[in-house]
Length: 182
Image (tube, rainbow, N blue to C red; front, side):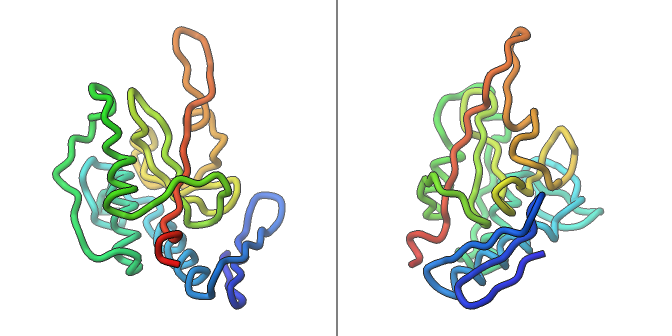
């Protein structure tokens, strides 16, 4: 599914494989490891503020990002808990984005590559994160599916918001965890 040649990473994608070139072979290997770690959580049940991999474990989207970053050595071990899992329903402060930029050192980007982070706006803030596998797909712990899943970024529940029968595009932002490490 993912293979490296020097500083290039090839990933399977719907339609045909995609090839990405990075600044260094280490970045290509790090992104590969990050995506593979995320995919290894597939099927883990969804429970807020949890971080135990496997069918008898549980995880939410924030802890999936945390575990993947820590377990692949991208960041030093840390635990962001406790955090209010329903913050986005009642508050406006961008806690999830602040956590990504301040704790993980992410920077906002427009050009997407495997291992980048997508954060969608649910409720009042950007509050649901996923890891990009390729240009079309992400892996994320999603409460509605009750587990870690692999889906397309254009799935209606991610890409659209419906209010009083009016459908609008759901806002999404993208972040790179590697830029400050170069």
